[in-house]
Image 1 (cartoon, helix red, strand yellow):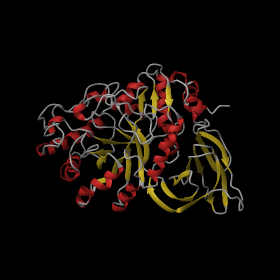
Image 2: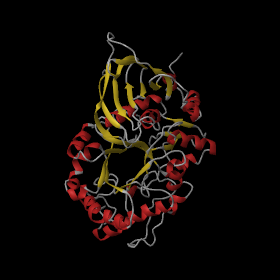
Image 3: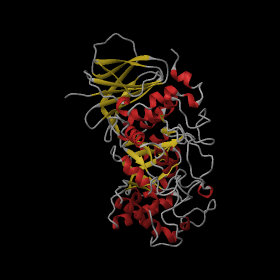
Image 4: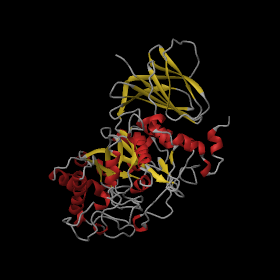
Length: 500
């Protein structure tokens, strides 16, 4: 039999019959939960065709002679607390969902948010007003009336529409429980000196108005049934494309304006400093604000993006400098032509399951460098990697095709769960909020792995096999290992339900 993954890459898009069969399975079948005996549950997704498939439970054995690679787990040594996994709500995703019938739309939500039948996403991102995938209309803020410092014309009406963010979030909340962090690309245009490059700084006369703008956003969402858990002042600031606001100014805004405003208004929301455009920027740009202990006291977590693609160790540097602040990776994606890793795809979106291995290794390496939360960018896009909003003065170009977690073909109504979806789901489904990463060592060069202890005391080991099929020995218990077969190019989750 031909490897379906190999043959799939040779066929034109419209002939992906096997993909359609795999990806259109009902969620109740795709994540079947039939009973097994034994101590260690096993789930696999692989190049050979398994997709979060429940395998026979692994059994503890007496083994002192085999020469297999060994993974040893030491749950006495713990690292960061895990706060969640997920992706981003954007209007583009809701537009795609609204192209489906009600049953298929429900299937997608269930597959993303249901912790039993689906991926169980627990931490989501929702931008404040417009971004490049606010696609149901033109660029907007919540107050486009120049000089309206009292926010008399503030409105979130667009977010309440059929393609709006509140509609999207409230529908998703019917299928699972998640927290939300909200960053902002741009404040209302009239608050800046100008939108010319180098002049996109907030005019200090509008600092108080900007604080009121954030507070109105939090309150308006709350009044419409959506609680924003984390407020993140600016997305990728202190760069050329969005706001030029420096982190020193952001720190002053947090300390002297936004936090006091939220407190005065009785709003329960945690503060984040800003989302850097890549991992190294965290250690490069945060200190100018965080070294002020008064500012640091207002910050709940540090947020970075992954567009450096592989500078993971800079996150350990950041952790070592501010060990009391959790680190989140809050955005990454492919975007052609200018935002792909070396040897990355040149056409988006990517349908091949094999692409998930890249993302799985990124998640794993972030976790091993103190990341507590991992959020992808667009959760859902269409067959063209869109639709996208174009606003060049706000840094949002045309021809902005990107790669999502789920692809919905708005013409044929087909749904594709990408390789990224499955690799991410092996984390989000099994590693639950409040888990601790715990020590595990050994393995072999082709294996990338990390281990976690959940709040229910279950131990979850995720292993990515980046090479050919191999067996390994796993020491969950002293002197009683399990022997596990790892298919070629796969991710395997072993969940040890320890009984005290």
